[in-house]
Amino acid sequence: GSITGVDHQPTPTTLMLLWSMVIFLGAVRRLPIPPLLPGWRGGAARMAASRPRPPDGSLEQLTVKQLKERCSQHGLPVSGVKAALIKRLRASGGAPGEKVAAAAGSGGGGGGSRGGGGDLPGRTLMVVESPAKIATLSKFVGPEYELLACSGHVRALPSKPGSVAPDRGFEMVFEQAPSKGRVVQALVQAARRSSAVVLATDPDREGEAIAWHVAQLLAEKGALSAGQPVRRISFGEITKSAVLDAIGAPREIDMPLVRAQQARQAVDYLVGFNLSPILWRKLPGCRSAGRVQSVALRLLAEREEEVLRFAPSEYWRIALGFGPPGTPAGEGAAEGGLLEAEPTTLRGEPLGKLGLPNGEAAASAAALLAGAAPWRVTAVKRSSRQLKPPPPYNTAALQLDASARLSLPVGVVMQLAQRLYEGVELRGERRALITYMRTDSLVMSEDAISAARRLVTARFSPAEDWLPAEPRRFVDRKRKNAQEAHEAIRPVDFGVEPSSLEGLLPPKEAQLYELIWRRAVASQMASARHEALSISLAAEGAGTARSSASRRVFEGFEAVLRPAGGAGGAG
Image (cartoon, rainbow, N blue to C red; front, side, top):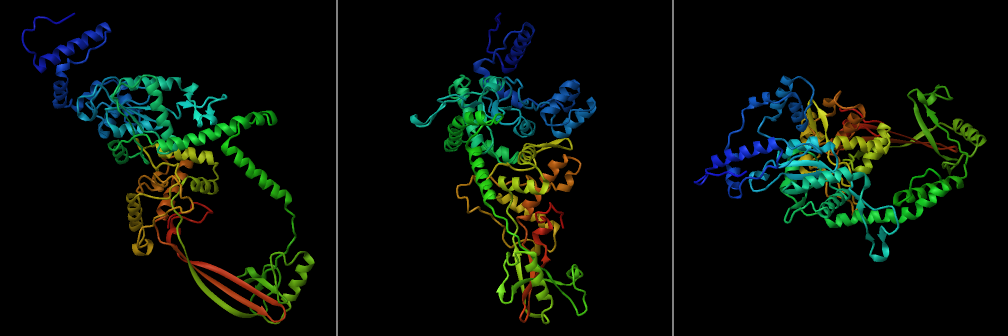
């Protein structure tokens, strides 16, 4: 019906009262609720902003189920009785009056205004790649954002002829991924009720392409209204400062990055679409062939051919043990703290690796050297060398080192790193532990370098011995075209030491985090110093020999990062 009998200009309070009645009647009759009268939109928003927040005690008015939902939205544990849930929410700042953006799949209609302006009809839709990020991000972005995950690519090249047309400038035809029907439907519905769309996919080529596909699909589905802004943001670490800085500096989609990803995708298609059917016929059970598999297969084939061409050669080695007169000869004589040396010449001829081709030659040489005139020391050379720390990890280095040190397959390494990047539960709080794990860069930010140096100063004394005078900055000169738009893989917070996570993370995740933490800290430490000693010996008419050894005189970065035999412990 209509409201009659109003013969004067309604005040804002009267208008809000009448609108509340309409909301109530609409809820009872299941009717759509109209917006505020156009002339009063701004005034109502100002009134809402000036209204005091509900008292903190209104948490008691919520049911246990509602409290658990609010805890989940804040990334808090949802176990416990009502009093424990209320205490947890108050401690985290999740008091009523601060409506938290729901996680993926939530409805979310009208809600708050964007940035407090009061002139936008709905919340801002933020699209991320992984659902696991939502619980962490929802703590940072506030109630004016609705977070949804696209779970990777929403469009793909169909597996049929003509998806890539080289004769038409490599034109590519994309279709919605068959498995993404529900995801796309949720994104379309959220975009229609949102005032703006923010694409916060991963900060690499693949993430840029995913953002572009999401924007294209929303436009094709008619989910974007005229003038509705669609912006791209990216962040290399999931921390409040990084996320808010990214939100404060939105940009357009980087089309050169998108084209770079599409070029790789087109090569995958053109190679794989022609090769895969051959593999299926010749090797039943093979899944596919493409850009990566084809090159890898060639490398394996060439290596196998080298192995087949290899002709094994027999060779022997001799070790000489030197000690005071009367030292028993024979095996083990050089192991009792005596000097061990290796022959370098025999009767004036260099003794190379294959110089003793069989047992008879080795026995003859051993008899000659053992019965030679007294051996004399002809030269003693001392030298020192510095061993610089390695740079922080990029993706390839992390995969290699974690595989060697932790005996983990590459796929498992990346899965564990993904979870550390997206956030893990720590004492009731969801926290991201490392920066983005797909990177070619060896660079750490200035803030990260300063944090690492502060940690070294606090743990090692005197600090001037353990820190180089200037911060170390690494550049991969061999890869001039590397993606260095983001940082190397490093801890988000150097203060979160591996020992503090004991029992809070699964063992493999804890070991991988320790490896990343140690490598990043070590990269800013002083070089290790080693002293080398080389002794040359000679016996007239028989031959010469050399003995060498080294010892570490200063640990430097090796106090944190041991050589590749293991992760090592802190000094």
